[in-house]
Amino acid sequence: MRISLVALFCTVGFAASGALADEKADREKEVKKPMFDTLQPEHKLLERFAGEWHFEKLTAAAEGSKPENLGTGIISAELVGGFFVVSRWSGKVYGADYKAVQSLGYNIKQKKYTGCWIDSTMSYRWELSGTVDEKSQELTITASGPGPTGGTCTFRERYQFKSADSITIIGEMQKGEKWVAFLTTRLTRKR
Image (cartoon, rainbow, N blue to C red):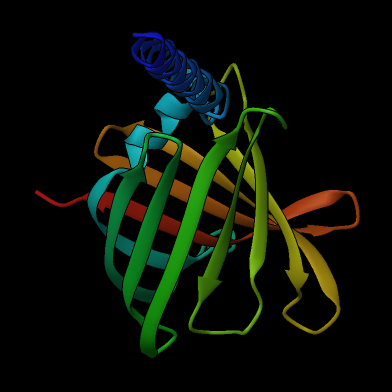
């Protein structure tokens, strides 16, 4: 009988310690859960880019002249978790096949829009940084990279949201204290 009681106490003890170990493992799993970000109001802007678009690239027209058409194509833009939009561009620009990929998101910690741009015209990867003007609701993205005649230049793109189906992007290059427009890209949502 003594052996049976000892065996019973040992069995109960092992079962209890196993349950405690399981409880401890469950608590550790809870503690190690990853912390996910929460979408912020600034992420809503990214939704405006999602979808299928036509694009047309034009030179900035000098006063009194017409802009020159540099090329056209299509864009397919997809939201990634609401935190980013990834846009894939393809078409004919500068008389050649053209491909580009842009990622754009809102960085909660840095409190600005960030992303990158790569395209088939150069080996440089553009790092993008931007903000939205509260008054005009225009998104301005800035980047530094290779200039048209060598050296490094600062560029910016001003995204003007004309409607839910139309975005105009004004490309500008910094010359001294002034910003000089050199490119206009018109996006029209595909129907």
